[in-house]
Length: 61
Image 1 (cartoon, helix red, strand yellow):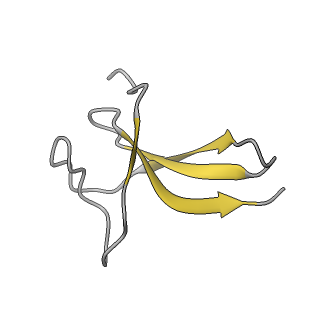
Image 2 (spheres, rainbow, N blue to C red):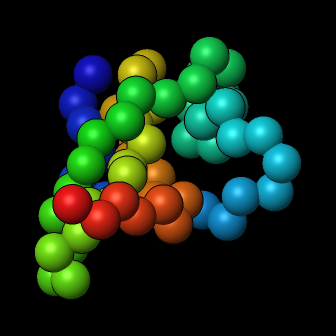
Image 3 (spheres, helix red, strand yellow):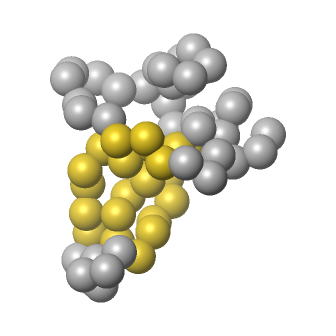
């Protein structure tokens, strides 16, 4: 599995556990990407195809 360089923005509407890219149905891994404001974006990564998604969650540290 190669992790995608692209991060797709997703707007949540109910449960988000199925990967729109490959159809994997068992949820996502999390990673944290530091943004320009010094906070961390919570990026979801599909464990099957490596697609990355930004659902708008931000964590101040």
